Amino acid sequence: MERYIGTVVRGIRTPIVKKGDDLVDIVCDSMIKAVESENIQMRDKDVVAITESLVARSQGNYATVDQIAEDVRNKFEGEIGLVFPILSRNRFSILLKGIANSGRKLHLLLSYPSDEVGNHLMDEKLVYEKKINPFTDVLEEEDYRRIFGEEVKHEFTGIDYVSLYKEIAGENCEIHFSNDPKSILKYTQDVLVCSVHTRDMIKTELKDSGANKVYGLDDILTESVNGSGYNPDFGLLGSNLSSDSSVKLFPRDGNTFVRDVQKKLSDYSNKDIEVMIYGDGAFKDPVGKIWELADPVVSPAHTDGLKGTPNELKIKYIADTELENASKEEREAAIKERISSKDDNLVGKAETLGTTPRRITDLLGSLCDLTSGSGDKGTPVVYVQGYFDNYASK
Image 1 (cartoon, rainbow, N blue to C red):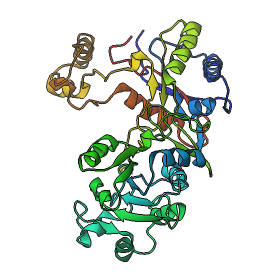
Image 2: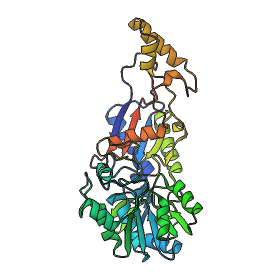
Image 3: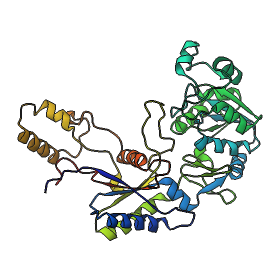
Image 4: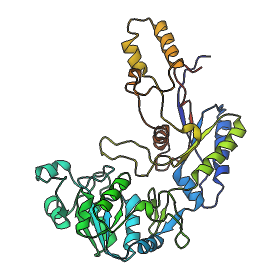
């Protein structure tokens, strides 16, 4: 029978999850109720995706600001340079509170005109007009205020992040502005790298430049401190504010979880089901210029069938270059034949021009993040059907 529908995405409602709940059972029961209530037929290569916050919450993977402070004290004895944190109440403000609670003097180095995920501290046009060179110029807090004003608010959040971070860290904190991470060595030789995606390169630069101690947020709470949660791979990266005094960490042991969900759903449906955990999507807001991905990865765990990148032909390219004079029936038959007989590896081939060269988990995670949202939809599980279908699929 001819197929007339391609990819279908559904948000799946679940009960409110708390620490200690059997999330495998909750996800599978919610999925089964959903497909049975809507008479949905599960198929091979269907994808069930679970948001990372649900997994971390069921694990009780939380830490307090005092537990963060204790690990920071264990790693640093004197002044600490905090390099390139993102501008976020949800992501960094609570971490800064914990770091400040260590009692160490802090030097906060902010990149400008924006952080690494696109949150702006200032208008880049104003930087140009003021003849400031962001590649070389190091600004102090008094320079920042003199040039840009006493109140500089983020376009979307309405927050003055310099004031917010200064208030959280207290008087025992100095704020500096530079895009060269080595600038921090003017103030201290002990550094905590706070960026997400550039952290490894920055650690290397600082060590090669003679820094004494260099850690990253991914090195804090890699194991439990005074009974805290932890993440052995990402530490504090991927964490979110949970309350005024605690954070929810990125989930751990994800591979066991996705395999257990896969087995239970595959046993129920007698189909080959893929499962993944997802966090932030990997896309950029064209207006606010914010790159959504503040987590260290889109998917911290997924089943083996989701590895790799798409291997797709660009139908538009073939239709425009090879089938311009063919009839409707000839075009359809030719495209289906090309898809059915395509090579297993199309990298570099002209007929792939314009396809998206990204990992499947990054594409799926972005789709799921946009579907579930971050507010009150109440669908922390996303069910995707037909993602691996193509124009030749029956």
